[in-house]
Image (tube, rainbow, N blue to C red; front, side, top):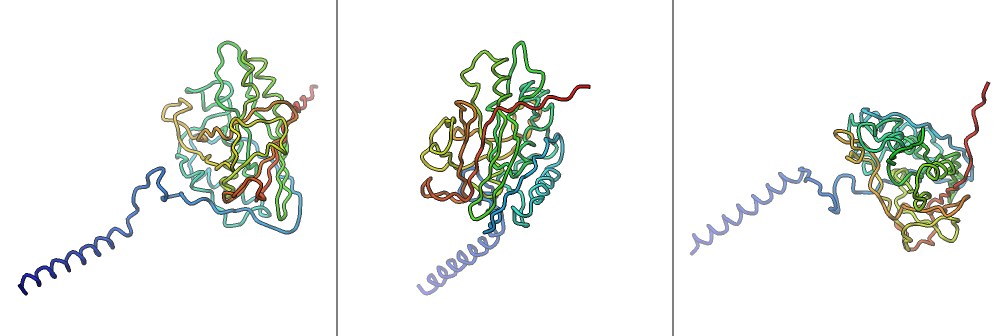
Amino acid sequence: MGSRRTQLLFLLLILVVGGALALRATSNVELPFRPGSPSGPGRQPPPLWLKTTDTVRTLNIPLSPMREFDFKSKAEILALRRRLVLSQPQLVKPAYEPSQQVFGKITDGKPWWGLDGIYLNGPGKKSIAGPSEESRFLCNPFLLVGVLEPHAYLWRKRRPQQAFPPRPLSLTWKIGPRPVVKVRYEVGNYIKTLLRFRRSKRRITVLDFSAYNARDLGLNYLYLSPKYSRHIRMRRRPKTAVKIRHYIHSGGSCGYPGGCNNGSPYQAEMHFKLLNLPAKAMLSLWHDRPSKVTDPADLTYVIEFVNQPAPKKATH
């Protein structure tokens, strides 16, 4: 009886020690991350990188031109992003690093959807023509919420001679305890061009918000106030703040062999229609989900939509 008890205790000891060794051996192994799981690489939201100050100041932020990203390395693009963010040290903490949630899925050496591809050529080998369309946002990090077309355009017979995207005209930051950002967008040429070249007028003034700049800087939730906005209607009319999910990855929508880097995903909550011009979108942005949409915003973001034709070039 005593011998049997000793054998059982010995076996139990082996199991305990073996389990402890196995746990120690696996404690430093990174388990594969499954999309949708509650934890994993990049699952934590970015910190709020924006500085806070009690001193009220108004800053006019210059808008950067679009660039060509085709076949560049991910490291090169992220270095550019970091440099552009830190070019405004009065706005951002010096420890800023590009968010893995937003930029971590950029693929080295891939082409990017081009602006001419979006507006003139559609999917295929010519989809990467023109400056990289994401550069209008990636190279303007303080354009926290941008405006873009809802899809690439396909033309049957006639087509425009050049791309005609909504165009930011100015960007102003009023910093202080409750910062306010104002951006003016020229959309008149976009609407007039579609009216001229497309038969269907039903979706002419339908556009999307692109908000990965806000997400990258730590503002993760957005709400459009119907009360303080004008001549704009969201496709869905959420009663709570919308979680910003936008990021950049490599996908196949461009139709170019091997795919392209591009923005994703489509969020129906970011889809809106302009009812008239001028129009105004009053957005509240938060780092953490607010308990109600009337909670004070971490930052208020105002987009003014105008019809302001580009100045004609002087002729000699």
